[in-house]
Length: 249
Image (cartoon, rainbow, N blue to C red; front, side, top):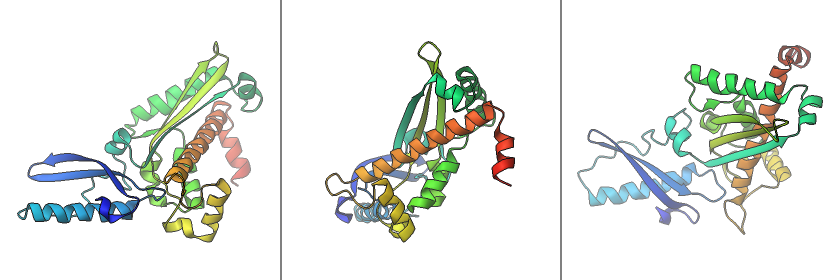
């Protein structure tokens, strides 16, 4: 696997068996690239090697959907894919009241009944949030990521609780499968390259390969947290429809 690239390094292989069929999920580091093509090259090397060792083995396809790419799947929600990020913040009581126009207790209750219980009632898979995909899609389009990977990259659970004797709000977003890169693909387009440069993550980090992509993933999560706080506050304050009528018409 490692012979296929200067940066791709195999970290582990997860196997699942269905009858006489074997599904292999390769985990590897890919530097600052999102790395799909790098992984494919490395996997092809492994399959060629296995084929020579086990000539009676049939390779049906280089991808068996156990990855799982561009599809909602529990394996990504549980095991992670790309970057796994947790972002948190404490919002002071006066900010909740004066800026967000709501109350800490109201936000905590709304989050529990909407993002957690409501999503559970719907049988959600990784969708325990208000609108993470809106933010992920916007950042992906602006920075040259694969917009189709919004599917699994938007997996997110938003949590809120009252802290500091119930006065302040603790909010967190946990996103286990953010798929981003700062080299290759759409990152080379002029506008998208400019946005990456604006964020300070353009290209490959020569001192610490992979750190630019990791920073971009944290930027995505931080943006999602801000979006969650904004929408949840608007709903809690009863301003959602009024805002849409004002700004979307």
